[in-house]
Amino acid sequence: MIRRKKGMRFLGGFYAFPGGKVDAADTAPDLLARAHGLGVGNAAAIFLTTADRPALAFWIAAVRELIEETGVFLVCDDRG
Image 1 (spheres, rainbow, N blue to C red):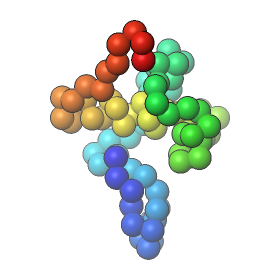
Image 2 (cartoon, one colour):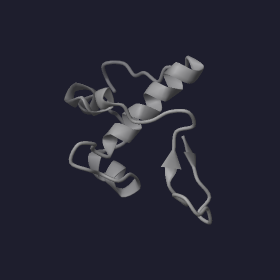
Image 3 (cartoon, rainbow, N blue to C red):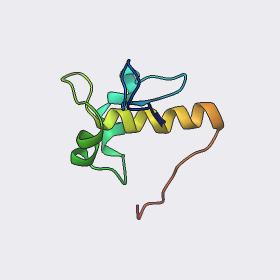
Image 4 (tube, rainbow, N blue to C red):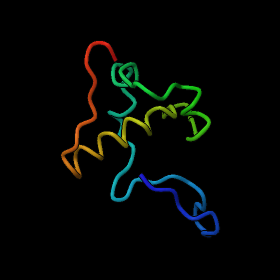
């Protein structure tokens, strides 16, 4: 994920996924419940929340894009 330059005319200062986007599957409640390290409040302070796309879905999309584009998995054990 990158942050666009604040001075850009289109979406300046916004976060973006190079070559990616938030998919409908990224909003699945079971995936949102598994997000560790970034709470709903923290995500809402960074990403725009809408009725059909909670802010935490951007976090899920970033992890999914990382896996798809690089093969890098961010995992944790049963202790978090």
